[in-house]
Image (cartoon, rainbow, N blue to C red; front, side, top):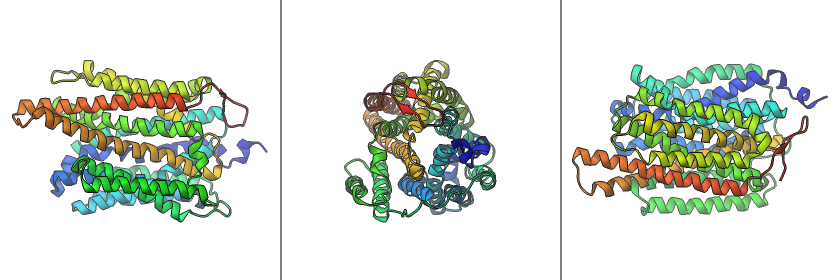
Length: 486
């Protein structure tokens, strides 16, 4: 019996890709779709500017800290079951959030979304990894998935703008039911249930150490954004995070059934891919956050127009993600693709440091968005595929979760770090002056400061990934996993 025929998903693989893609799109959308709806939600529920960040942070905290556990649960108890549970749970949490009558209820719903997203996202990527077994088809599937992972955030800005402007901020949450319920029904029909991995158990100490460590890491950077780097809660959270994550590494070396086998982390190709996801996530969120502010507050665009302004970046991601996995990765390997993607990201950020009050979209913003889109497609799709090469089926979920964790934690850290640097730049530029012209110029100075630091992050990514990722082409044998030729 061939490998393809032994795979119960083979005959339905493209339909399954559609369901997986829909689920991934929903998870990625929710990282940004609420951003544009926040001002309307704040007005309706009457919460302060200081509390506003928790609508975003509560999702990131739950999602980032529980991803590794979610990935391992899928490995142990069956990805079909976990995937559908994640979809239905996410839809219920979204309905609660959409109906929220208080700030506390909305924050709780967003945290619940993050928790179910942590089940859903690694299950989706691991299902993709195990459903497509023929190298050429796997490359196409990862190209599509990578395009969704990279472009979904920009699409979230567009969809959030349309829903908020023409319906209500609540529909930025209710819309998830349109994705989740049909996807859950289709998954029930298409997916084959895989049973529990024999004799494996959940690594409870490792799970606690990883979840608490990641939670404190994201929380610490979030506190730095609002309270400053010298605040006791910021320093305490980051130090405690370092202790817990160090303990996690030690535990993984000694336990019989580790939550995250260190071989997954220490492999050169996978390690470079994880770093690529983290650093590109940190840099890309600068585009979504600060460019959104610039387009709306400095250029006067509406939420809908702002969303449409990001479409060229999405198109660039879709084009380069598809091309990179199907045509370029088999010929050149991941090193030149990811390195070039990082350099394009850095160059795009450098272009954006030139914006000012007279900048036009076509001349000052569009070239950077196109460059950014092409660059992110060259990073995300090859990094995701490389990170899951050769991973045993029993570890596919946790390897997939690590990819998602790196992108999510990188994005959270990048957002907090760059927001802090931008705020400091605004304060320094204004120097106590409060007239509107000075404040407008100070805001733009804050954005360009963030873009300059993001350019540095991408440049570091180019150096690190260019050193770590294996060079050479990918050798393919029929029915075999790709092997990098060094």
